[in-house]
Length: 163
Image (tube, rainbow, N blue to C red; front, side, top):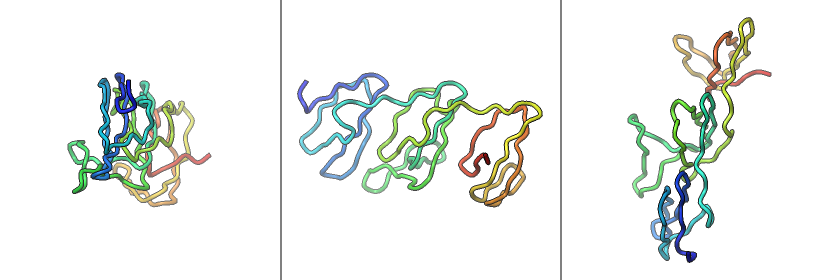
């Protein structure tokens, strides 16, 4: 294969920068991608492998792509993906059972991590990082509370475990 064509195997992807429009798009395999003269591959010549979350695992993605209410990707007026800069998204196996790519601008912050099971007669001490509503309870940044077992703890971006 020449340098202008890349074989993308199944469950792999590349980012393609269109230098005319200055917009980066995602190309997923399986396919043979033929690069045009005005395109650049910022991810390198080798395709990246999609992320896989095993059952009862999660990962954290920084600068996630913004999605609308139906879960579809949003774009700006130039056709570029809209990024939620400075935010973190927690992705669970239940929501992403299939392998998924990182869109342009997204970065993996925490790799696949098993969910924490809190045993009976034990608890996790949590603190709020920002204001949010936890069911009927309003939490304010700095609040601390206990998460009692036996339950599985699903992390949220608004809280963290106090060590």
